[in-house]
Length: 175
Image (cartoon, rainbow, N blue to C red):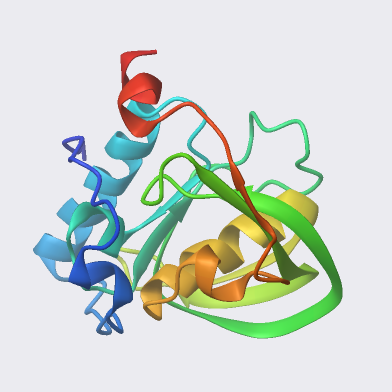
């Protein structure tokens, strides 16, 4: 299914701080939203992951693709998961990260460098298990936080661990 790229939701929109609701992975609206997440990721340069709240949907649905990121060691390819949950996490390290929904800022966040996450495949509802490390693990945890209404700014290792960065979302869109 071909999706439609959607506009990104920017903080302080309330959908970004709300707990996302579980979905029926077989629901055609969920399947369509999954395709829209991928289409939106493809449209935004350097995007490695999105969660449904970032396109205005309060659903437990995320997408990840770190295949072009130089820091990726593991890579599940283009992945969309419904109702994902973290089942194992280890080897915690602080690293700088940013977010398309918080343009112009980055921060140092403590995250596990090895994780296991389980969810369901949109459309079939088939179970999906992903073992990820390094950058892919960080990216998935960042998206899981979005589903829990948490922004990376809520997880800074220190109050002074926030940094200005670029480009803005508008600059990234224009390529």
